[in-house]
Length: 230
Image (cartoon, rainbow, N blue to C red; front, side):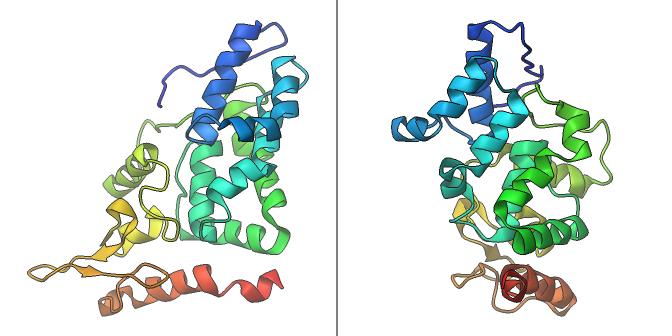
């Protein structure tokens, strides 16, 4: 559910305006409205938000730390895919490059998911774009670094809940030349049959030689961070 006009609340916002903002927060960060049993878990945060006790950023922290959000996006995902989703939900953009991905993988693995969520919502980028009272939205830069940057941003913006699986983020499957529609990643070679990758992570068993470096980097991100976690 995209929008072009930011939704901002204030101390003067009416109950109806707060309700509208709350629905939009869920569309943006959860990609749906919560189920009845989930609303019970979020009842106190919802009440505080609707009563003007907390703003949008504080409510997003409560949501991001909750089992409602973590069960939907964290426990079922690889760390890189979770980071990609968090950037989409809270910063309104895709991960810029592998260096940014690596930096946030380190935060997530070394300091935990609560600190990782705080790092995004307390960042200068978040504060400058959304402050404390504006609901995050999908941002469209006036210009992109390349056609590829535009493509990746557009894909993330329109990606549905779990549509491309829970392991391989767009940043990598696009670079590897994979098609991951429907949650199954496939490597397509010219003039050859499609090769479907069924093992974890969902990439082809043999990539072209020029992709070896990227493949090794992906392996490190998906599997090689266990030592840091310990």
